[in-house]
Picture 1: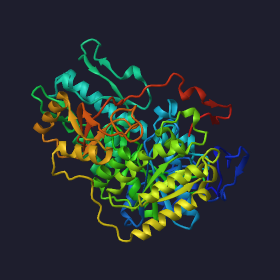
Picture 2: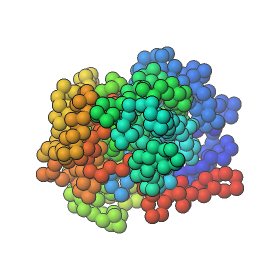
Picture 3: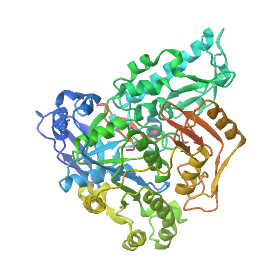
Picture 4: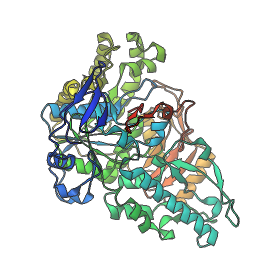
Length: 579
């Protein structure tokens, strides 16, 4: 597939055309550029990359060698897209990210996207994929959602090789690791509740022990790859992974098993960012996909830095709402990499605000300004959090044209004006880049008006205690009154202090469905305390994980999985997959 000239709606590829269903239900065909200009050559030219660095993966996707990072310095301005607290109504953060990039291209800017890879767990489970929607999508959607260029399978294999070597060392008694204190788990990129808690080693002469599977995005290998600057940095991170403890509670590291180079051999190609495009031909790096509640929830550092070397503006997103993905983007990813956004866009929908205001999902089509106003405190909380990082904040109203009313939109805009932030309506699902021109211009004007930005400063310093770091996040971002540690958490924190593992930023692992650690508390709750029930160490990735509430590292399938709606015809064309 070559560069797209434009288009809208849901799509499927067939030869040299793309059949698209517009937001009005009309079927249209999008023309492609001259077949003589390959996708690889077209994208390399658009990005100013030497074609030698762009490695084709079929006709419509590629990888870009990390060696290309050495060619030039970063020149682009980074725009971070986040959102209010998720609701069952959906917020469309990825769709708005893609639409904004297409809008920036429409107004004449050289722009690039840097997004996370989807996991197949949500694709076949409840949520669907992560390639945007309607006229603001990235292609080829099916390939991106299914084992994209082999990255997730490579991370799965590397993770499980380390697990197999650990069990082999236990069997042969060649490790100081206590078999009852192994913390390294196997992974697979699928939702499977039956594998959450299992027993391994029941074979003859085996070493029986309790085990369990995580989903691949929760693997520390994923986080390591996404935060690594290059293969040598990835080597260092893998070496530093803590896989468990001795009987005397001394940390045992992955480097002790002598297979770091074997893991690197599996991961060497996965380290290179993937290159695709949006429906309107915006170059898009899609690379890495750590969970945003249990990990840092952002695409890879190398993909973001590659995009910043190739464009004047780079649009990226962080998982879930500002309190989870964006806080971790800023306090973990930016702290480690030296990256810093020039502006922060918060996505809101009238529908989500209604749900935060107490409206039932079945009533979201009914105009209700009062419900919107009752839900606005949730958006206000995220605006206040974003403003703490001293960057321009812009609210993007992701328009649902069929149901959003003028009065409801005015209520949101008035709230934003009172808080001193700009607000723009974006019809990105229905109109693509054309529907994002107002948002694009608002973002550009906000960046220009801010002038020289102050040096980026994380929310907290690493010089303060772990408890103080958690309090800074809980009180400053969630609006909590404080943080409480269970006895289990206190013991685990002492274990980490004993092993000098508390010098890292904190990744707060809590529900995405509330500012609190209770998923049943929408809106903007007050008078609550965040309870930390346990800690985990991601020493290779470079952060300490504080577990708050019931966080699933291996999600389950719903009663009717999304997989049941997927169809493949005799020509191999896929339908029924949610983007």
